[in-house]
Amino acid sequence: MIKETFGRIFNLKVDALGLAVFRMIYTLILFAETLQLYNYRNIIYDDLPFIRLGEINVIFIFTFWFITLAFLFLGLFTRTALILNYVFAVIIFSSATNFEYHVFYAYVGMNFLMLFMPVSRVLSLDSLIRKIKYTNIGRPYIVDRKILEINYLAPVFVAIALVYFDSVFYKLSSRMWTDGLGMWMPSSLPMMIWIDTSFILNNEFFVRFLGYLVVVFETVFIFLFWFRRFRVPFLLLGMFLHLGILIAYPIPWFALCAVGVYLLMVPQGFWTGISASFKSKTQTYKFYYDAECPLCNKVIVVIRHFDVFKKVNCLTVQGNAENDIALNGISENTLLIDIHAVDNKNRIYKGYAAYVQLLKHMIYTFPLALLLSLPGISHVGKRIYRYIAGHRLTERCTSENCLMPEYSLPVNETDDFLVEGWNRLSISKNFWKTLLIVFTIFQLLLIGISPTVQKYIKGTVVSDGLVSLNARIVPPLRKFTGIGPHPVFMYNIHFEGYNHIFKFVCTNNNKRVPILDNNGMVTKSYANGALWVNYTFRVSSHTLVKEVYEQGIIPYLSHFENENGLSSSEYIIYVKEIETTDHWQKDFLHNQMKKPWQPAGKCKLDKGRSEFEWNDKMKAVFEAEKKDYR
Image (cartoon, rainbow, N blue to C red; front, side):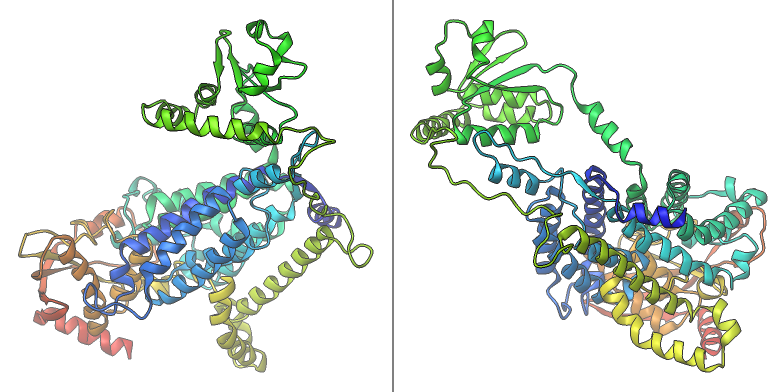
C-alpha cells in the first residue's frame, strides 16, 4: 500500500486550480507580512530609528518586492517574479536577525519550492498570454491544466511535516509539553496573548487534551498525510489548531501562512466544484465575431479567460448570425465590419457599446463598464475602437491565407529530448524525489542536536560531530532553504523566570506606548508578528538584562515619538511582577492580570539619545538577573 501510495503521488496528474488558489492566497499573506515590516522598517532596520538608516536601503527593496508580489498574484511573468521573490525574501528576512521568527524560515522555504512549482498554469495572466500567442485561425490553444500531485504535497512535507517532526523532539524534552500544558502555559501569560481565553484555560481536562493532541498530531503527521484518507481530517485539525493560534497569539501571519499551506491538502474536487458553482447555467449575452479575423479570435480568447461566471456566449458570425432573430435585416458584411452583440432581451449593441455591455454582463467588471461609459473616456474609447477595427480589416484572412505570425506550439512535457525517457515530466518527478530526500536528511541532522536525542548520545563522538556539523550548516540552511530547528514555546527557553513586564506612559501627552495594555496583554497595535517576537523574547525576555532592555526599547519609543509628533519625550516606567509555572492552576491568567503596576523608573528620549533612571527595587532585580545570567 505504501509503495502504491508514493507511486501514485509521483505519477498521478491532478487539476492545477488548487495550486493557483494557493499562489494567490499565499502571496496575499506574504504581502501582509512584508507590509508590516515596511511600515515599521525604522524600528527593524535603522541603526538609529528615524535618524540614521541601516546598511541597506530597504525602501528600495520593499518597493520592488511589492511590485514582484503583485505580478506573482496576477501570475504575470511568473518565473521572473518567483526568482525575485526568493531573492528579496533571503535579503530582507536574513537582515532582520533580531526580529526573525519561525515564519521567516517558512517563507524562505516556500519561496524556494515555488521556483519549481507550476503555480501559474491556470488563473494567471501568463496562461492567457500563452493562449493568445498560440491561438490562430481554426486552432485554439488549450492550456494543459494537469500537474503532478507531488506539487501539492511537497510544500506540505517541507513547510509542515518536517517542521512538526523536528518540533516533537524538543517537546518531548519539556515537562510542560509532556504534562499536556504546552498550550495552557503560553496562553496563561498576559504578555504572550492578545485575547483572553480563560474559558478554555480553566478547563484542565480540555487544555491537557489539546496539549497532548498537538504532540500526537505533530508526531504522526509526517507519516500519514501522504494517504488520502487522512488528508481531510488532518486538514481540518491543522486549520483548527492554527486558527486557534491566530485568535490567541499576536502572530497572525504565522498562523495564516500555515493555513495557506494546509489549503494544498484540500481535495481537488472541492476547488473544481467551487469553480463550477460560479458558472452561470444561462448565458445572457451573445457576442458575435469574425471567424476569419486573427485579431478577433485572440480577443475571444481574452473574453473567455476573464468570463469567470460564463455569462457570455461567443459566436462566429459565419453560420450563427443568420439563426439569430434579433439580427434579421443586418447583412453579414455589416456584421463582419463591426462587432455586434445581443443581450437576453434581444437588444443589439454595436462596436464600442458592445464591449461596454460585455463588461456589464461579466458582472465583476461592471464598475469598469461604468468607467468606460463616462463622457470623455467613452469618446476616446470609440476612437480607439474605430482605429483598431479599421486596421484589422486589412489583415482579415483565412487559415490558408494569413499574414499574421503563427508560432510553433510549445514542447509537450512528455516529449523526449536528447535521450529516450528524458523529458520535462520525468525530470520533474526525479527532481522532487531528490529534493525531498535531501531536505529530509538535513532535517534529521538537525534533529540530532535536539535535547531528546542529545540526552542519549551527549559526550560521544557522534554527538560532538553532530553539534559541530550543525554549527556550520544551520545558518546557510536557514538563510537559503528555511530548514532549521524548531524549539517552539519551550518552558525553560521562553517562560521560566519570566517575572517582570513593563508599561511606558509618556508624560508629554499622557499616552501609553502601545506594546502592552493595562492588563499586561499585547495590544493590537504594532507589537505583533516579528515585533512581538523581538520585544517579548529578545528585548524583555525571561532573562532580564538591563543594557539589552534599554537598547531594545529605544526603537519602539522612537517610533512612538514619530507617531505622535514629538521631538523629545519623557516616560514613566511601570512594572508588573508576574509568575510563571509549568503546573496547571485555575484562573492563572486572571491572577497575573490583577497584579498591580508599580513604578519602576523614568526614561527620557531626545533625538535618539536616551537616559534611563531605574528605582532601587528595579536595580536590585537587574542585578539579580545579571548574576543568574552569568
